[in-house]
Picture: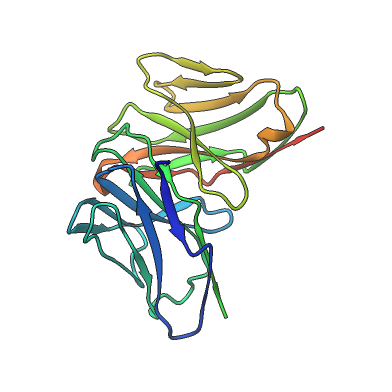
Length: 114
Length: 113
């Protein structure tokens, strides 16, 4: 089955700790995205990557970092600099770097602060 | 950044009724207007999308209507069912962000039996 997997489903972060959210796709898609979802806020773009070894900041990149070493993988690290990390994190991918392409979403990771 | 304004924020419809959700935008570089559906605890999934070489597109009980001059597009759910209860988002691709989507804030739809 083709799709996007995210892990873990739930993640707990202690203050001052960096945590990494996994995103893997086997759709052979070029473009990948990370969004953050807060209640009543819709989805906001954190980072995006159009090709391997290249990524760009989105609207709310502060306190986050990413890497794109492989086409199928786009992990997101929530650093200690992110002061309000509690949210639902969604990874998405699309086939090409073009408008009009369907974005496919993973099941999400819910991050909670201890 | 392309702004997308979605209304209403929440909607309660009786089973069999029509659900209508609206989106307004300021400008867009793309003729592509998608709607996503999200169930609680899940990722969004594309429900239906329109390219406005037509003013309306219908897929089953779901219809997108597009008004280019008014810069608005809407989602109509006919014969709404309790299984349609979900959050719906309109979105626009953003060429300044690798064609990431700018989402509306969402409409929480509840269809009562």
